[in-house]
Length: 240
Length: 244
Image (tube, rainbow over all chains, first blue to last red; front, side, top):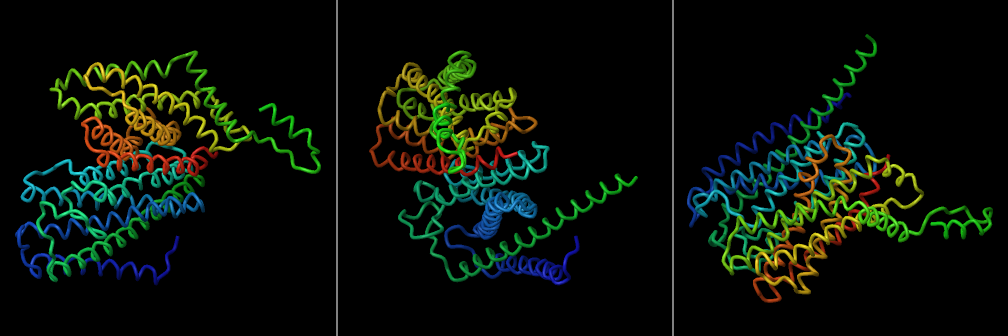
């Protein structure tokens, strides 16, 4: 498969952009934004924490859409998209969980607690890990693609649950991120965000979104390359 | 089945294309009935599930020797963990037996709606899981000394088992095609049924610890909502799983 020149250039540009953005956001986290009022220096990890969550969230949505599209159109590219998105999404949500755990140690005084959102995020991770298991367990490639698409749709229910859990379980110690909050603030203290905090946060989220798109694109190309090599191998074996 | 075939044959074939399709609900009912009859004769599945759940509850009550208050707080969790594990045990067999004997292929050849097959199998699994659930109500009442004979709890059990069987039938119809299917089924199933288990456990625990209605009602509503979503998902997704 030959890629068009312009697309390759866009990808190159995106790669440089995500490296640049990452450095800038890193500098912003450490030098631009001051330590948070109640939490001090540890709060700086929060930007990475939320950024990685948004990255994985985006990738899992992509996998969900890819699953639906594969079942509708039966084009292999959707399956490649789904696989790539979930693989990278697993990485991002692992960053999310690990940074959250590091953050929780000084703030909640524990590495891990069965907070509702922690529970649903870890279940989400397990669901997508199970997706990888399912793929490796089925040999027939057509059936594998089909089942993977179905399972990625089912597994999305865990992503959905992660989003809505803080609405139905107000006892969570995670702050409500979207929509008006009915609960009083949790242990985190007042999240009255200063402008610098808001700016850094939005920038980091943007950075992680760009990074996840770039890595996804590279991963899809890798998948295509692997297939190309496979088909060449087959051709060679047939001719020999 | 025969009744509809004759009626469609009596109409003139030229005027109408012959329709061999059995009515939807008849397919569902006859498939579920078939599973029930097979089970009534062999009792392979239900016996294993019931025995497993008795053992699990005994282990739980042995491992968690609790005071009165702690028992009320844990009995909901014990109930749902046991239902989930015993149910997984049953699901693994239900479709595997169908596939190994080749009857799954025969069912798929039949000119009926695929989703009807899904609901038929689902009802069988649902009833077996429900049997486990109601056995557990007796068993836990005795062993944990907490009165589980409450209509609302039964409603929770019915809804929870319904969701479990729906998702379980869907997932196990995929896992039967995998290499290590007995191993794969729990791994695939447990993360997906978690919304059901969490909401059912929370609702049962809130109910048993005598909390107010507004403490368990949202969980019950969530449970109903999740059930509905998965029932619908089964309708749309089962076709894609079994098509060959």
